[in-house]
Amino acid sequence: MTQILGQICINVRDIDKSLEFWEGVCEIPLQHRTEIPGVLEAVLQAEQGGSRIQLAQHLAQDSPIDMGTAMWKIYVNTSDCQRLYDRAISAGCEPVTEPMKLDRWPVTVAFVKDFDGYLIEFVEHHEGTRPGVPDPKADKEN
Image (cartoon, rainbow, N blue to C red; front, side, top):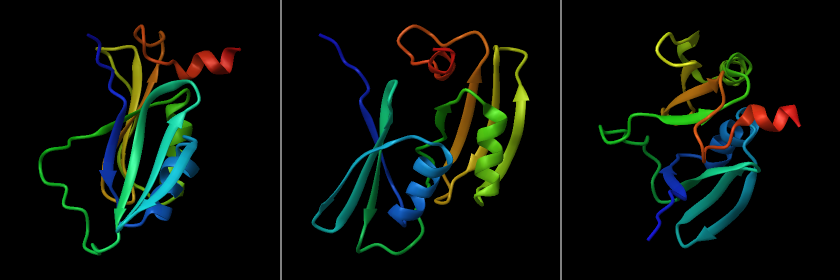
């Protein structure tokens, strides 16, 4: 028996504003949008694979997203951490931590809060990714 993490669904206040971040800033392609009773949904995924993210705007809810304590952060692997961080800040995301190379792992990381307040970690791997994890730099080299 095999299990593969396929998709994470997060609540958003405004699906179009959220798509500005995920599709516009992060450049993760929109795969499809749908509407079910009371909910607008959009699914995004990189062409190279990896998990999908689903955005869900519940039309009857107009209050801010209650972050609670269940979710800590969402990782986005990138080929250029500084560029992505700069794009996010220019788009109006809240800066949390500027890009920095870590001593413990061969990565550069940066943190922002997106338009809904989710903590997003941008990760640039300097020595490739683990097997099974698409490497954003591999596509650039081809």
